[in-house]
Length: 108
Image (cartoon, rainbow, N blue to C red):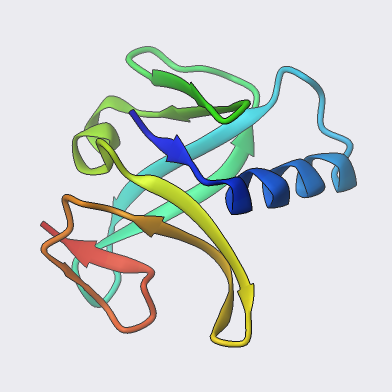
């Protein structure tokens, strides 16, 4: 399961409205190679599910990830911070053994 914190839900709904997205859109989360710790997160809106996608709904938000990424994202919570220490989405990932200083990459 990929979880969605209230802070992330609020920002996702704000962006959804701003971009005038259709009800068929959802949040796609994935993990790619790269970043200073070896793996990086990607987050985007999408409207096409692919074969082997893992589909979750938490806190009223549909989240989709590919099977390979799910192996890294299992039990991760998507959060959003708008504070002085940085604005943006972040991932609270219990599977990460190390994260970089900026929080955008990790290793397991």
